[in-house]
Length: 495
Image: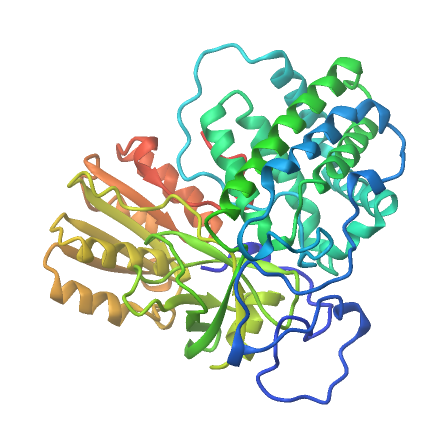
């Protein structure tokens, strides 16, 4: 399922060199602004994971970062980087020099939200939480200026970090504020916040993010917040942000260190089949270069050879298979860099990169509770994976699937779902075509039921997830039994 963040201005180069080997030889000379990554071998001989190719040392260490305004006040941020000793590389990276790191994108925060949020307690907010939330409320009306100023500070004070980010920053800019809103929302809910940050830390390994980068990011973040929140900013507020950011970054650093001991930073995947179901939807099957662990209902991030350092989220469209192949449903969205490349340019033999699997929209196999699944558009992909997961576990629990689309033509995978229904009597599939029924999937759910004894799963466009969650609550399903992995646009809708 393609995340809406793919909707960005398509104003960059159409291909890039580096760790990708073009499917066919090309005499085209790549623009200079996309030749920042090292040349590596192609699909015929994929190199071992966790062993980055040689690259220029563009990421400065904390010792190399010169003094900048406010840096003395932020000494504790730099202290966090000293924990790097706890994340000494293992395996193939153990003997590599520190400068040899993959020069890929390093967004400060990039992660979907936790699927379920425990109800907030009546406990009074901590003083730091009060100050952090007050700051976020103050800067919310000028969010664009805050994020633009943050990146301007970062690239001026630490120009070596610029190469770690995408060439085009239009999509990247607003992720910072969304992540901060998430952290502010959960700052006193340690289990949720820590789980969120650990996922970020693990996911950032694929960008080449290192422990010594975090102090620079925190320094510039606090500089931007202090500039745009003068009415609430004082010494106590700054101290609260320093403590908060230091704690958050250390959680991410430690999570990355632990993950490095058991998994590569990324996987290579060779496209083995490319099935165009509609003019803008393709079902793509990929063979990873080594075993890829995931659970049905989860998602991953994908980078293509045509847009280096730009990653987008896609859900797995099947449960884990014995042959190790991975399948994704991709819809090309207007101006979507990655989605259009995957739908219109990818062919068998092409090589993509995959980040680690994440997401909590998975089946609880310790119960026999029924599953109510709402899938809109390519959101049917993880729903199909969940159904296959129930089949693999030999269960006969009731599974109700509502598959929605604008037109009948957009129900590109309905035949697959109906075949599953014919084979498994506990499965019921209902197609909801908006133009014919004049209603959306969440509205159709009201006509059936009762659902109060079901676990619910929602996957699709952000608007459908919003309305779906509301309807599911209205029909009696408790919030803690509604699962979805919401994209960044849904950061602040949790009720």
